[in-house]
Image (tube, rainbow over all chains, first blue to last red; front, side, top):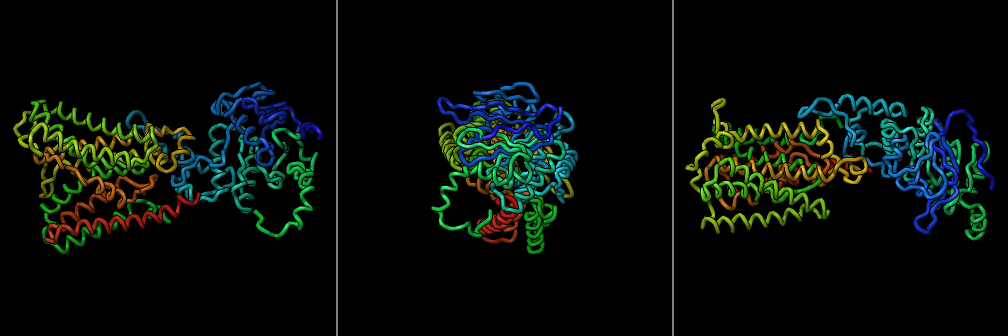
Length: 276
Length: 328
């Protein structure tokens, strides 16, 4: 396999996050090794891999949930060893997990600020800054291209894509410069997945760095600047967009030769079945 | 749906208005000053508890021991003053401490074992019910405590818990003031404070709340202690109103509180509801309770009515949950 291409969007800025030869062992089990990648502001790094490829281990390390055991991790060019998610958060790295940590029956703006509510007044008269939080929620969502008629509607009434966007907007509002998205499109239908990709592109255009974890190369190709492919716990390389094609990416990710070998056994061309 | 219709208490408001109209027209006593004062008083005692229970239910828990606890607190004050000669105010504090202890016990068991609060508080309900009768009998030889009126300091405490004042020709009991104040306070806390936000969140999705840093355990402790505190207050309001307390006081009312809360729009599954709704639920119950007396019906109709209201409310609430909650 080829090594990572020289950085495509070559500019003088230090990457928000950079990893070199990153690896993670749990006792004697080596779950991840040899990951080298970097991500700057306004870039989307797609992490591709099948189930068990090491994607979740990588997330856990980048998010600060588990410390790495090999290689180096640099945030803003400074070497770090995250001890907790709070640690990562304080370096501007936030993670949006698949369950989104939302409360369906709670209004959108209350979800947005849950656990970090803004208040006014003092002592027993300390109260929620309702108007300010409503406005902030509305504005944050508008920057991602979502205009809600009413931020007081229960968040459960929003579509899956919109809820994902609320979670992203929340992370950004609370100081994230780099957001790790854990399979944001995998539980969604085609339309909703497309919506989420639009929000990702929008957030990228606003200067956010995004690590987009997915097992769908088409989704990755739609928004990615760079692609990190994982298989069996090791990196197959980081590729710039102009250094690889979608077909090559798909082949690489699925283990092309394994699929080729499987082809004759499956017996017929792909049918026009469910396209999810 | 529009903002107004989304409010949990709208159904209860409509029902309360309907019941008010019905009994006002069909009985002559219902709308008299004495009649109004009667059903308002009745509603207030259920209402204070229903509001506290509603907060707890919004936070995703039940408290079946709340009814028996109103009896326990009254009995403690009764026994401490008439049997041991304790100062009334000290007895009040003692009873409050006992109630909060039971509340804390409920909260501790529920949060540390993750057992359903329905079962945990069902157990404390039976324990309290048994203790109320057994201990009262053991200490006094009877199942009722009387003669509180002769206790020194009783009259001062009565100003807070058992007095009344004239208004529009009615003899308004102080418990109605407590009820209105506590409903307003609970509404403010729910909708305008961080704690209130957390109550909705914890009841709606505890795991997500924990993920974003809501202190789930502390919120639940606060809610169980609130219910216990309300049970103490209602115990005192009943005690100082009639100067006697029965060992069976409050038994069987735990479900009335829950029904009032549900009629007022609380979901049994938590995360949704309102304090004003619960207060309206109690108003419906109080009006029906006294209205049936005024109409000279067999009082057994009340239970059937209550069941019907509950069923109706649960069906309405189901629609709410379908609309919003179950999509994720």
